[in-house]
Picture 1 (spheres, rainbow, N blue to C red):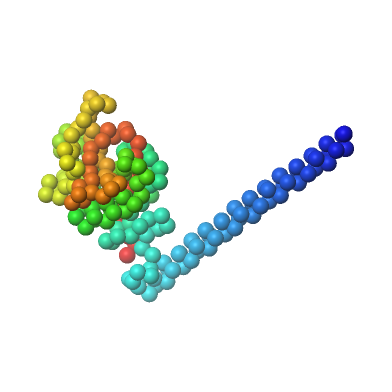
Picture 2: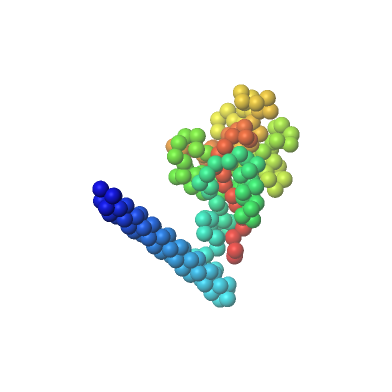
Length: 203
């Protein structure tokens, strides 16, 4: 009986060792591929800079960022409150997105719609009236141009159902598509949402 148990133990140890070996090999392979891709991207960037190329073959944004109109955009996969979302953007040398024109809103609305899993799976943008109620400021301290807003019908409403402070931060997204690009609504800043970061491209 003891001999049988020993044989069984050796077998399980071998199986466990084999599984760990396979997992380690897979991890090393993935790491190798990532390092190779990063090296290729860096090499291409250096070649572009050396040759002063400006065509689309030259990467203008870091991995994980999407280029558009001379800027790079990062769409988070995870949620956080508005202030923490902004902190994360700053750690990546950017900030929460400031929407300057209709074309930028069109791009963002389209990209966000494709990333939303549920109707409430919206994204923070860099607009708030937390300093003074009703005075909407972007994170770069510019005032919101009232002729260039994309509020959903009935928004902003500063609903105070969750807190007496009301809703001071802005998110965007309409899973089924926004009428006339209107996809903004104000929300309680401590609510956890995904977010959009923005920074200039490397051109």
